[in-house]
Length: 124
Image (tube, rainbow, N blue to C red; front, side, top):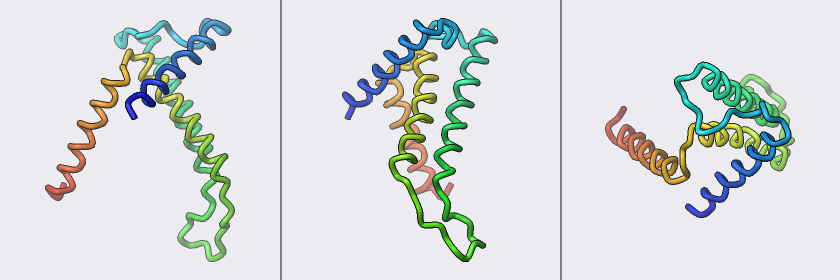
């Protein structure tokens, strides 16, 4: 699995480099200095693009209203997944811009996973 995470990071880096080559102002040079206002702005804009893609994914969930008697069972899994990948790519780009490595991200993920499980057992 770690190889796949490394590959995902590399694919994102390759794409970001290609975009930056074609549109030089699309991303700041990374890893960014988080103390600089323009870099925080770039990270924020990237995050908001990811949130926008999440909203696009949510548009595909049409049968969630409790009060609605007649549900809409139509669901395009492929389109939903594509929007989720778009969102993930923006969030992954933020990690790349911050200089986070696949190993660092994986370790942070495992650490947080342990915390939430501990909270669950401890009746958080």
